Image (cartoon, rainbow, N blue to C red; front, side, top):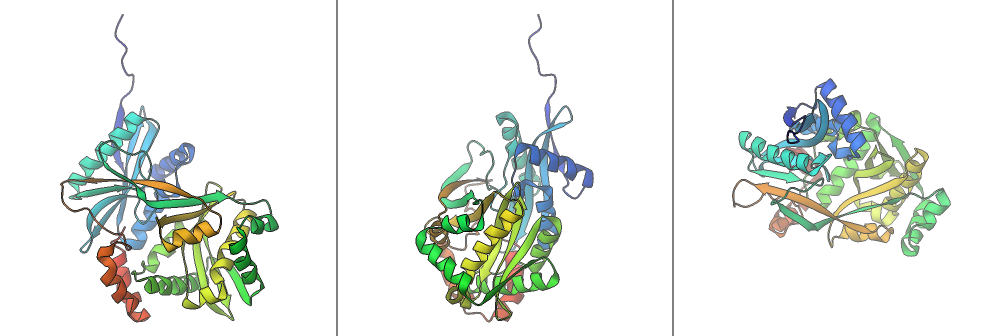
Length: 352
């Protein structure tokens, strides 16, 4: 009797997320495999359109059927260097595969591709972790929980101290608007840009937000104080989950408890849209944002990221909380908002 042999072989190929047919096939695989928002070709297209960082990926097929996918953004920056990132401007991504063998082949394919594209670094933000890569699970945590069945239950699900803050926000003279039109986009960008300047980091180009809104299921929720926007968040909807992703508040937001109003209203809005989960996103371990999310009753879950470097040189560092950036952050906080908004997007589009 002949020895057993494989009837089909796994083959890798580069994929173009902008090709409608290829994108549709990959989208179907991502949905069936339970991939994240950041595995979707639509995310890569939005990033490319909004930042000029090319979206591509490696697809694995066996007998014509997709068995694995690695979404990638080819990030280049004169300040931060070059890298293949999965996925660019995302907190998730990485290898999505039916089995370990396919996952290994995709990781190996990424290394070969990085060499051809002169990218000395590959960053995988989730997914199946390749063996022998540099893994880290102690830097970031994620926060997600189920939404309650009704408005009152949602309020009661918030721990007592934070619930008191939410109740005060509901009695304040604030108004809420949800939409995707130009007025919503302009209000959100104004608030977000001020928020990140106050934190000492450059703002992303508005074109990234516009592209994400156009490509993906998303909306903007903005809180107003006497007609002025004071807190705003751009959220995505994926696989029965809402992801408040790019949000912030002005200096007045804390006094007005506008952020409390914003996130609570988003929880109610998401449930009415049919969502069952609220993904509060990623935060640095031990940071103020992580503590804030714990106050809402969310439990931190470690996030594992993988990095491969072509040499033993220094790794790309785009963590704004790193001590090496402290002086730059202090300087950025003092910049006039108009100047920060002018030069910030040119820097931030290279962060990936």
